[in-house]
Length: 261
Ligand code: S3P
Image (tube, rainbow, N blue to C red; front, side, top):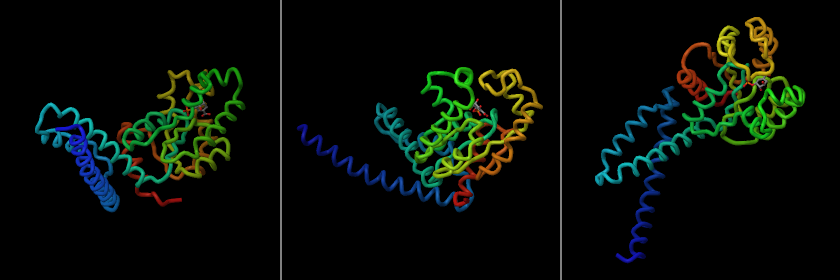
């Protein structure tokens, strides 16, 4: 076959593929609507595995198995992103005291929902090329809070992202106003004893340096509690359960309450 003829065949395949992919994506949207109406779990990783397994078994020419599997993993990711966009037409903002699981849960939600995760502290550290500890030590807390607020303002205008905030973001009202513009705020809670367990060996939090005791954590948490409460649209306890279980619970409650203001 001449090159031009081969290319024509490829164009023809692409037209068919595009039409089928469009149909597939529409069906994926129907699935999410159905599950949402019935209150069913939206993300079912075992189902994705099943689909990929079935598709790979259907491949006739075995030397293409890996290629088709790779393409299907991409299709699955694109489908998840589409579902998330439909379910959550807003940014998901993770707020909560130090040690309540914002970073770990942020990563899990980002993987499940195929939504980009922006961790404000990590971004600040990368931009300053310094740890949070160093920023506090060298420039002091008020300077850190200023940088944090500027970053909140900048990142809050993004679309369809997960924003994981440092625990002190609620200290300034303008941060909350900025985050709420395009986001829903999810408050991750934990008991002082749980936070103590998680942070007793930690030395990355300047505010807790040399003060990691249950009573100190309790005092700081009590002081901040009303602010978290007032700022949040949703809340979840993170004392018990695995990261996966807590993340599933979050997705359920966010998708049930998507119109809540
Ligand atoms: C802080 C929490 C930290 C970090 C900084 C100050 C706070 O983030 O921003 O150490 O005031 O609660 P994490 O909540 O992610 O630990």
